[in-house]
Length: 100
Image 1 (cartoon, rainbow, N blue to C red):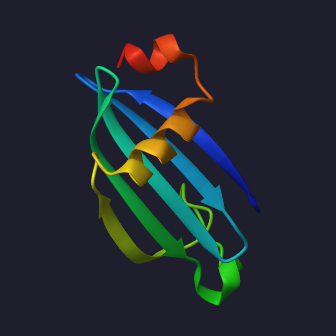
Image 2: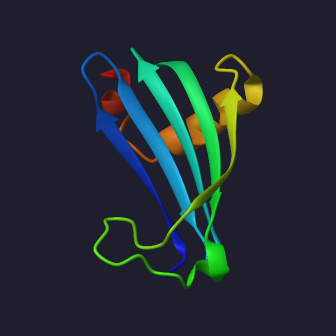
């Protein structure tokens, strides 16, 4: 399965905005933790699927077994991080993002 999704979660005192990209042999996630429209922290995570993604796990929520390749902590004040957040956040109503 290939595709992508952007999901906004309301947490207790902040929001989590996650972009997920899926390929045949990988999964890539970028997560932003936001409070009052400002980025508190951001993470980029890459996963791969053993056997090219065709090893389905039975009776689990996870469709395929994943192996984490890397976790990157992103600087919330970096211009590239801010630009990426703005691109993803633009898919939601501005009032929703500002309410976080």
